Image 1 (cartoon, rainbow, N blue to C red):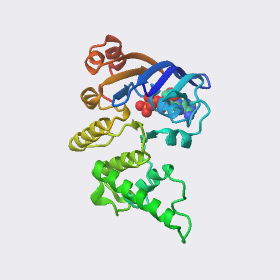
Image 2: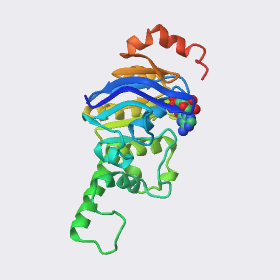
Image 3: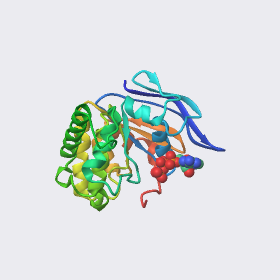
Image 4: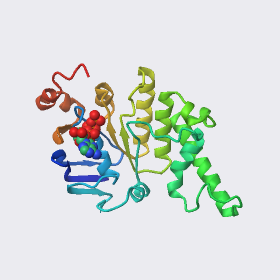
Length: 253
Ligand SMILES: Nc1ncnc2c1ncn2[C@@H]1O[C@H](COP(=O)(O)OP(=O)(O)OP(=O)(O)O)[C@@H](O)[C@H]1O
């Protein structure tokens, strides 16, 4: 088991955004998280990545509690994330964006110093090569010199994944990676997520595209008003009366 959540809760004032949520993620597994708007999905990612502190419960990664660990340390431990609203350095090139992602593994400051030691230069070369490999894997290599802000939307989403991968994560948290994508882009994304699983990494995927979720996830957790109302294989989830009920009348969203 890679990630373990035990009875995790998060309150905002009087609102229980999450309560009593438990689940596990294993290596080489894609766990889907679905639920209506406001169900607590993004809050879950904020807790796992340490940008928010749980009000209750325990989160363990590779057997270690994440309580009190700062977000950048959690990244270095092997958890990377993409965001619902794309967060790239819009005025840096595609390659530079990914190099920034790889940099959390390096000792020397990437942008510092005009006079670099040979060791620093070697390190930068290694970071550059890794970043290029990530661009290759995610299908953005041809655009490596383009300013990130000028990329079409679908490629920006892939670039975000490339940048997350460059930090060498064991576990990837993807927050609505298919948002705004057309059918063919979504198909490519599906292949990419499949590749990430093949590398033995764990993936937690938040996505509203139910068709995508049903075909790619190994297991799905369903949240509703901050509580886990179901967990199981896609076919089980699709047939679960509580899940159908939570989604009733939501088809037009
Ligand atoms: N920083 C915050 N302060 C106060 N309330 C918050 C905060 N973040 C989230 N919430 C509330 O917590 C609940 C869960 O929000 P969250 O964003 O996790 O839901 P979600 O399932 O990701 O929704 P969506 O699908 O719309 O992104 C919502 O009621 C939201 O308004």
